[in-house]
Image (cartoon, rainbow over all chains, first blue to last red):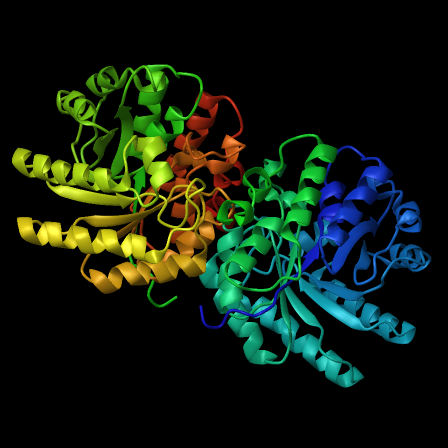
Length: 317
Length: 317
């Protein structure tokens, strides 16, 4: 456990990814209260909503109003998701959105087609256009995601070279444009990762871009979420997307049962880090209040463990 | 990941620990069907029932009948739990019980009192009597458990010396009696373990008894079950108690919410091992049939992940 990072950063996805996949639309006031509880716990980045087609995702139709009504706490970034130019323009029009330049790569044709309606190659061209758009607007390119980086329910196994090809291509693009290489996220969108493959793919990326920060976007689809986080921590990874109470999941991943496909649970993973002496900057008891609030809002028992058992703080005293 | 074992053994606890904690008593035929499905998957040891007071634990009152009606598969051991001499005698009277000599140590006074109604020291004396009873009956001493080996909800933090004291004492007892040192189980009865402490406690035990096999009995109370298993695998541990579908939990552990306190989930952990190239000897698809059967019997969604998302086998093809 020598190579564990001293400090780890969690980016909260629950208010966006968690509520987006629910069939029901939840009241704006409830979602605002949850976002505020999450920020109060010390989370430095909370993805609040997505600016996508209100017809396709009615749950997020009120994103502009949500941002307009946000009471922002200093020290927290309130981010949003967009998938096309019109969504980005709607996000840009909301003064309170903290714009973070991000791009998303696909590595299998069927998922690129289903989620994005274009080929892997065409998507890569589009990401190049995004990079140039961000540069033109003075928005730093912060995050590059590779979705289904460990395997794809629709396209099958993903060779590690599919991931490293993206790294090489992006490194050239960044060098050409004299911009820093962004945080490079491996997304286990469909729960294919295991700890061994985790370490091997992180190692392969790091070999190509040793200075780059590596991030992980993991789902606990097959019960290996926590073990995968540990394997990544052992490789020095210090940046994770996660969802309060384990909310979330990709509605297009083709799982029989949506309940299994949630993101790794923020408070359980924060607890693991803190128990191992890794600083997260998060007040765990306050975060648990947020996860219990999420459960009250959603109205059914959620997947988080710590929210039902409590921390060890009181038991140690 | 160099020190991962090549082969790992899972001892199934679901039929005993899982059903014992339920308020309801489930039909014998259902429990027999589950036990058979588990054995069919290739599990080498299945704990089927406990011989405890029928007044205290009415769910297990039919243990003798259960064993009488078992259709045993070759290659699987069908074990039972007992806590006192009368329970042991009832188990011994059942021809089909595979008797495994086991002893249980406590390291905190309040849990020893609550679970066992005697002091830690008195319990140790009783375990000595068990060892001599097993020797007299020609039953090999196979397993020694330390419960709450990582911490106790009732007694607070457990120093590592409380565990190593048991190891030293037991090593002396075994040497005196010229019997082999048994598999030594660290039980995280109440979900206090984290991966760092896991490795440090395993290391401390191994230093004292380098040749001894170390086993783990883990609960996923706080969401770290899978990460703790990984940490143990990295120390070469190859023996785990687990429960199908994540059933189980200790009714006397004092959790607010029993649903959080289940054992580590057999099929999720088997999946992790197999994905990392570690042989378990288990047919995962058959094991998933058993976990889905458990869910149908219990009649509510259970905690396992893989049972709701499926393996990767079909998706890889």
